[in-house]
Image (cartoon, rainbow, N blue to C red; front, top):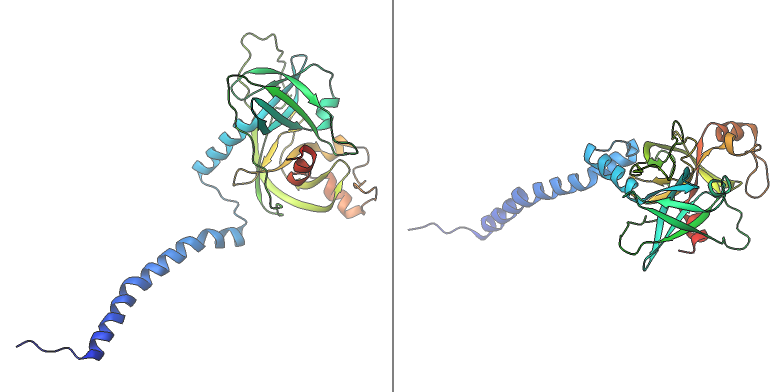
Length: 273
C-alpha cells in the first residue's frame, strides 16, 4: 500500500522545485542583462568588439559624402535626410566658403552628383551649410540624429576625407570610389556654452585638414555631431563663446588642445528636421 504524502510536505516540495529551477534562471538572466550596463557605467563603454567596430565603420562609410569643388576634394559631409529622390547633405560652412561653385558630391558608391547649395535659415550663425542632390536610380542611407546629449568619456567615431597627399580631380579616369578615413576616440568635454560657430563637443579625435564636415557618431551609430577642425586652426580667438563672452585661461588651454564638433541638436534646428 502506498504511503500518503502529508500536505505540508507537498507544499514544501513545490517550493523547493521553484527555488531550484526558477531562481537560478532569474539570476542568470538578470546578470546577463545588467552586466553590459554595469560595465558601461563604470568603465565608460570604451571597449567594443571587432564585429561592432566593423559595423560602425561600415555605417560611417555609408553616410559619408565627399564634397568637391571644380573636381577637387574640399571636405566631408553627411547624408541626413531624403525626400523622394532628393537627398540633403550637411557640412561645415567653412568647407563651402573655402571654394566656389559649382560643387559636386561623391557618394559612397563612387557616383558624382551636381550639388545645389541650400540657403541657410535667417539669423543662423553656426558653422553649418547644406547641399542637396537628386538621385533617380540609386538609394542611399541617411544618418539618424542622436536625441540624447553625449557625455564626457563616451566613445565616438568620425569619418572624413583628408586632403593630405591627395591630388584628385574629377577628370581622373576612373575616379576611385570614395573611401573616408575613420578614427575613434573619446569625448573629453562638453561646453555648457558653445564656442563661436556652435562647437561644444570636445574630443581627442585626430581631425585633419579635409575632414571638416564629417560625421561624429556614438556606439549606437547615431550622429552626435559634425566635426570641425582643431580650434586653433579655425579661429584667431577660440576663447570667444557663442554669446560673445570670453573664457578663462584654464578653459582656453583645454579648448586649444581639443578637437570640436557641432552637436546634433544644432544640426536638427539648422536643417529643420
